[in-house]
Image (cartoon, rainbow, N blue to C red; front, side, top):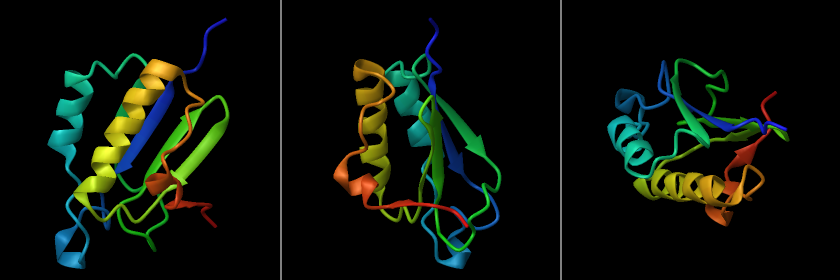
Length: 112
């Protein structure tokens, strides 16, 4: 049985990462480097996306796996992105159902 890999979509478009709108720049190069450094691609696919939609929030990510979609918004610090990388490492080691760390779980939302 093949397990669907986790797919992480990081928004970097009209609002997300746009500093002139008061949002933190999305650390794309650091994320890409971390995926290579930790060999995450086979287990957690990283996709930099144009607009994911919920523009009322800054710096949105969405991940999908066999359990469905999970949305995270308002990633406003480098620490948020560092914890996202750490979570991806745990998913790679422990499987797609590894829970979000509390810092990211607190940023979970349901788009309307």
